[in-house]
Structures are given as structure tokens and as C-alpha cells.
Image (tube, rainbow, N blue to C red; front, top):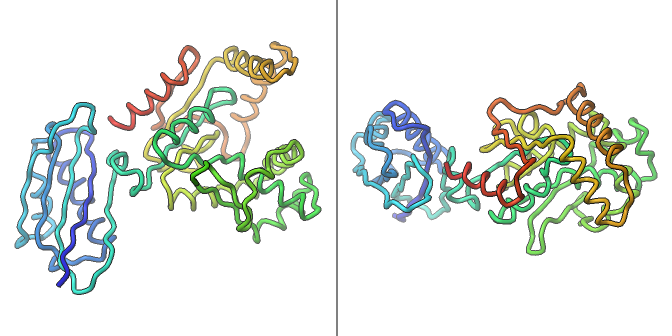
Length: 336
């Protein structure tokens, strides 16, 4: 026989018996199903909880699942200031005839414990100029997970359209290319890399011509559906932060954390005016403000996946906040 151990963790929203037992059962069931284990394979289980859980022993959940003859024990986790609260951890010892890798399972907010193993998804939505891309990219970098630049995916599709000699403004010509298109984004040692049909195009897509093509194909519903499908596939394989206008409501409705960043139109116009000025480009503040107001209206009233705050998203107004303050707020949300 070969002996192994596999870990798992979950969190509860409050210290109540019913929820503790329910979440523990879900965790145990997923650990067993994910690793194709039977009760006979299990040698023993150790449960630990943070100090704020004492309404019931998590081991009771194992007994209620039918683990009558398996040795179980419950302990209190060492308390570390700032650590994830209301957390239940499990360590299962198993014996198997054949050697094989076992997959840990992290659920609820416990995905923050091991974002490299669990699939942690963070959705950041909001209007133009609210700081979504900047915040999402920096947060992902701090956490060591992927920042999925959805705009880059549209650029990659735009590149393919142009390389095939098609017109980005012709819906039929673009749609005909979709079935044979694969676009992926990977996190490498030098940052995010974009691949089009297996070929890296990270640098090729950063031109004005590609940007214009991406804007034209981005309004085609079939293109959006195709890229959303690809984005969801990526989210199944990697922990990531994704930003946009319909991420929490449409692309990743089951994201572990949903945030809606906003700011006053005046502040967003000021940021855009300042950005253009730093690039040496002359612009008119009032014109930028009217463009932002019109874009907000267009995004909120479009028929397909309009801009709106998900019911369970956390609203953060960035008008008077620094980038660092917003990121700290997000990190606190992930820990609590």
C-alpha cells in the first residue's frame, strides 16, 4: 500500500452549526469525488478551524456523511493576526494500492490560501476611466496570478481578420473566421503573453491598425460570444483577475470576488485629460467629459450584456482614492 495525504479548506459566513456542517460536507464530498476516493481508502482525517468557529465540531459532518469507522480529530488553528477568518481546514490521510497525484480542494474564500492551486477568479467591472485595468493588473501582479487582458483578445482577433485579408467592419467575413480561431493568454516570467492559433502575438497586436480593427469586431455579438467562451475556458485552468463591463454579470457570474469600480464622470474625464497631456496630446476637457457621458449611456443601454453592477458585487468609488488605497481595499475583501 502507498500512503498519501491531501488538503482542503473552506470558509463560512458565520459561526453557526448548520452552515459549518453544510460547508464541511461540501468540502469533504468534493475532495473525495475530485480524487476518486472511497471511504475505505481513508485512514484518518484532521480538521482544524480558526478561533472564531466553535458552534460545532466539523468532524460531525464526516459522521453524518457515513464515515463511522474513520478516526477523526478536531483542533484549533494557530491564530495569526490578519489571517483568513471563519476558515475550516481538512487534512485527509489515505492509502492506495497505486501511486497517483492527489488534488487539493479550496472553496469559498479559502481559495485565497492557495491561489496557485485553487482557481481564484476576481471580476472587476465599471465604466471607462474608473481605473479597472490599472487596478486589475497591479492586483494580479501582487498575487502572482494571471491578469486576463480581454482587450488583448479582441486585438488578437482583429489581427487574424487583417491577416486573412478580411474587412473588420464586415460581420459575415469576421464570423466565418470564428470556428477555426483559438486565442489564449498565459502568464509567463516576463508577464502576460497572448497567443493566436498557437502563435505568440503579444507585440504584434499593439498597433493603431489592430486597435481600430478590434473596435470594429468588438461590436459583433458572435465575436463577443466566442471570446467569452474562450475567457471562461481560461478561468477554469488558472487563477486570474479579469476586468471589463460585464465580467461579474455575464462572463464570470460565479467569480469568488466581484467588484464594481466607479468614479464621477468629471473625475474620469480629468484622468483621461491628464493621461493624454502626459503623452503630449492636446485635448479638450469638456469634449472628453461629454464622450465619457455618452459612452456610459451606450454601455449601459446596449442590448447584449450591458454595463451594470452585479447584485453581489462590492461597489467602490475611486473618485477620491489612490490606486494603493483601492488595492488595499480589494486585498482586505479577499481576506475577510
